[in-house]
Length: 571
Image (tube, rainbow, N blue to C red; front, side):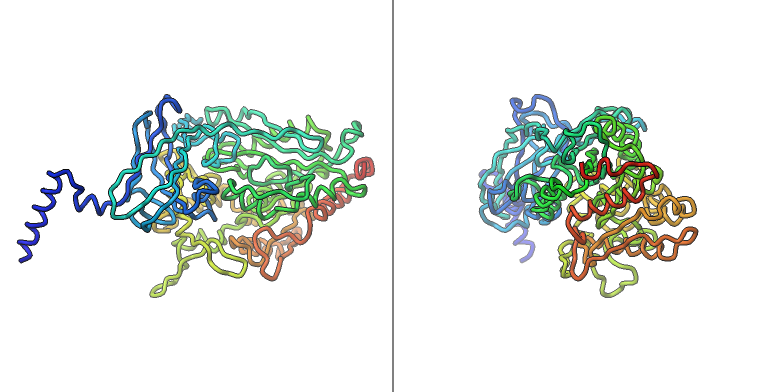
């Protein structure tokens, strides 16, 4: 009976094939997309990565509804190698996706779909590696809006996991160049080519800044001012989102890290404007560095085996340019650092690496500053990033992102899946792989060597040791160099983090706090403020204006004898 049934099935399949009808196998294969671009849009072959986005709504565009932390509509992606005009790449059930693993798991229904091709450039680096990466176009590694990338129109389609119908999508539009906002009375934009980075990458590389001028700057051409070098993710917006209007509409086309910053800080910019332009507000400059890399929207302001000598470029090219073009007091007491999240880590790193150059760091909710608490992971002693040690029968998933009430929103395993779909070889431009590019070694293929396996979570302790031994674990760096660093840091370190930081970043701050409470020769405990209860990522104890006043007071207190602080303070 079984043999007869099998034979009958084979005959049916053969007849279906002969008659031109879809086979049962084809019916089970699920939908397939054929994505191409015409020669009229791009005449040369393209190496890069193709993304297909699927959404229930057409607004915002599907490409802005997925492909980033917090933007969770399904998307699928595949690398292309020298894809010629008119040729197509297939996206089907075998194409990896997030958060849905396969197209065949998309429920039957009507959807809006859109495709993007992220264009890579081959570079021949000074370290001898030739690799393909997306070169930033002054958009901050936002592939869905990066100039020169190709994007399709939005299509309304019916998907059925039991249908083998091929859906063709044409990438028929080139994303236009970024429009840099015009300079104003308050805001100036800087962009320079870096000789150091250009040499390392074998390709033109740029650094920049957005400068906020104090009230009275043009009226007092003889006055020099102190400066807050503010660290942040890439954005052409002014420091601390300074704005002269009380309301800024949310830009629904901004996703990922920049969306987090924009939404978190919405409304604070106008309050800063009111403070900044008042009669009794201290006069100083604020400068936000711009330093996107081929792996992320920000270099973390340090030298790196994968990213190149960004630390040297910022300190020897960008800062001297800024201080020669704007009237800044070029003295350590008059230079302070501030920033949150990525910018918090950078502010501390710059202060530790250049204690003789900067006069203090205001470190807000920093990325992990002690790698014994890389979120909840001890990268030196834990064997796996996806679950805690010691679990046997009940193996919990390690969280990566939570609500301020503690609800887990994303696990480390899911973050690994997201980054694996966003890019191969560490090219996701997402958070975990950004850290690996900055802190870690170069792998044999020329791309960043992963800290852990994105599929299994197994930690590579040789990579962890490299990160510590090369000074990227700032807590370990402090402990190792305290005898020489401590005397230069006294009074200069100020930390702020919420007790329910959404990314568990408070855990590493506790580690540094514990060390500084027991520090000796000198004993300096630093200044630590913890927001509670239920204070999440973005916590600061007060307004930007009040924080800047505190910085100005610190600058005045630390000014050497004879420095005329009254010459700048309210002019």
